Image 1 (tube, chains in turn purple, brown):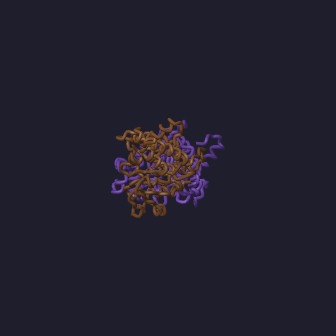
Image 2 (cartoon, helix red, strand yellow):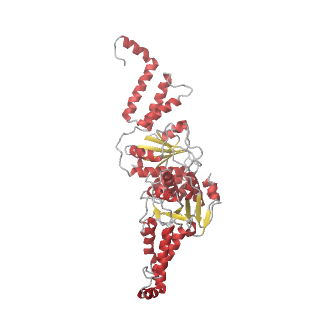
Image 3 (cartoon, one colour):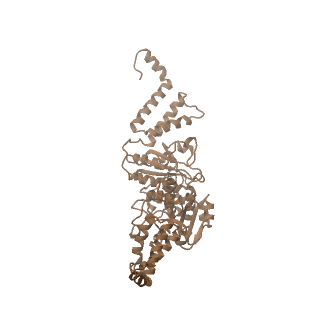
Length: 252
Length: 252
């Protein structure tokens, strides 16, 4: 089950950190590493810090976008040490770890870390259904990325040795859910539900609710159908529907 | 209370690791760092990895022996990732953390990490009343020292926010206890209880039992008195005692 957990480093700056993360992964029984941005897995520091986790480095997948890196993942979990509008629903790793292992029993899970200097952007966070913040001293709450990763891996490793908590939903792959959100965005802009100046505010709230629920493939199909219907209705279908209704016919 | 926890690095090899440990300490609200061996806190890598924990580095104390570094500590906790005779009573950090915070409410506690390559020696471990082993994958159980330190700090930080569990003993400083063990060793060799070829085997068992109990200063005085009496008895006091007993006098 731990092999279903993918660590995603978004635009990491230090190649030593990449190596440290690889070692920490292997220490905690994981092996699926992905990087968004430049591949620096072969640099001296990456290899030096990885020590006996060279195999993890060698098998690292490189992506140009976060969306690509998590496309086949049913659950995407981000990490942040800052607070703010997009980060208020963040939870400590001990609370999130059992949800991660639960989801990893039936599909891929992405655990996402941002660049060393600024962490994940709000843009990146939109892809995450859950957020982790590691409890730390208010005096200096910013952890080194490999240290933060180690704490998350450690909590997940411990949680993986606990019994399953029961709830079992098989989350749809992230790319299917992203396509649903693309469609949702289009239709809701179309009908004027979203403010064209700031469509993401409400969309983010929707992402969060559905992320919390967890969407199975059939749920994605249901919502896709709903928004397809909405688009049809908005794009001229309304008139057809009214016509049909007048005649007592079934709509579509 | 967290300021009562001293991190002791025994002969660390990488100065980058020293900096990483300093940062991890500050992240988790600690600031007392000690090094046994060469001081390399001013090297480029130490400072680079410490980032905003330069104050921790600057205040690092340097010692020539582990015994010196823990002299004023009431509890000494070692870390190991190996198994073996001297390490069998090792516990996971989550179990040890509440004991550390409990002891740190009333005195100094040392948390000791060994060199990167081989960890703490059996000699070093004799000074530890408790041992921590971090659960890890059997495939690669050796963590980077700064990563291991971070996990311990994190568990201690979380435990420090819990309520006190009640038991309150004020442990005597390590140096007082070490002097007790010096005395104990001499007297027990003297009376032939310890095998001169391998005195440490049984002594270690005694250390462990008393370490588990926790010795307050008055307990140390009691034991010291007992062994002082034993030495006196062994060094000719026996004859005097027998003489006195014959005469119905009180011994000493």
